[in-house]
Image (cartoon, rainbow over all chains, first blue to last red; front, side, top):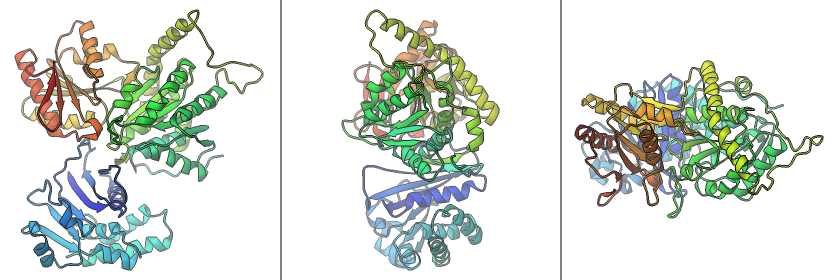
Length: 185
Length: 405
């Protein structure tokens, strides 16, 4: 089973991102789960969202997870949220930041020695979508790091997921995914 | 005429979306609602379907849950298909009218997204609301995942509206853990779902002005008892219809439903009984215990009311120890499921060790490790032939251990 934990602020699209990913993966015949920790917290509050992917039906409903991937889509949460909670030896981190990997690890020393990737999903979403909605670029970065799907397949699949939106927004999201795919380091 | 909704063979829906599509496919005539977390998206999605032309019916926004159920009662008595959704405090406010709906024999469908009851205020999942309504005279169906929330909501219409039943039906799903968790769901196509449920058949319709009727009359000691006895009689006998509908659904979809749900019970020495999503998590714990040589199984109810007394005794009668998990504050006694299951076993002359676990209140995470701890207790008690731990324990609780009896 593949397990993913998202760190986000309410309103940044982690739930939509997790559900979008689940949609794309389910199309390949796999079983998926996408959920989030909710409270009465409002927009801007730190939150977590989760994905599980498996070859067989997913029966596990515990919130507890030892993630294979940790996706941080808000730069501040690297410092204020417990992003390394319940990590495994080989947990991979993809973190939204304007810093280089070295600068980031210096700023947050608990990432030292871990498999860390950086990408500026905030800037990418501002440049492409025009708003700070860092979820789709993070998915682009995840595709590059995980090799889950190749870029073209993933973009086609995401077009279907986003089909209820106007073409302009779909195009902007495609550009965001592609840029993050190419820029993640 | 409502538009057909294009559905994929496999959709990724959370429990709320699954229930909303089932209500859409049932082409509910009147949906009276006062939305409340975590069931809000059911009626929100439904109203969007209606606005987009996928439903021919009416959405009535009312000022409270008491009025939401009253609106459903009025619509159903008038002779049309009525449904709504609620949770927690909203459910509590509906309770008075739940008894009216069942007493008036109105086949309303209520999708309940289970959530804790205040105080303290909490929006997350437990079974307090389910337990609050269990004696209201409704048929109660229980789902463990979004697929089942969809399936059982479709079946609820067919069961409740059957001319041999004519009773309201609740379909339960866990707040957030099911209602907001997207998973693979295989829906029926619209026309197949419509064919399966069938047209609504009015009985004693108030809109049939050539045959005037009165609903909800007063009966004192002269007739009240006979009415309630007949209501209970028909609720008990609804089992036949429930099984028939389960079978017809299985024939169409391949998805099999029974009154009682079992997992690896053929050779089990110890069993966890639970409701909701815990039924599935417990299967992972059971498999891990089996790797350690402990023959563990899982039992649940698909139908909470009418309570499958004999079937429960049959599947649990031969195990050595049972852990009954109640996800509701017991309020000064054992959990309700502990009491009901113990009664079924005792009445049938069975005496395994039965332990009660209070867990998961207000959405506290139900972990595989916690469930394995329950199996460890059960295995030790099975070995000793008696309870080696207190009969009632609170598990997953922070602070010092809490146990009674």
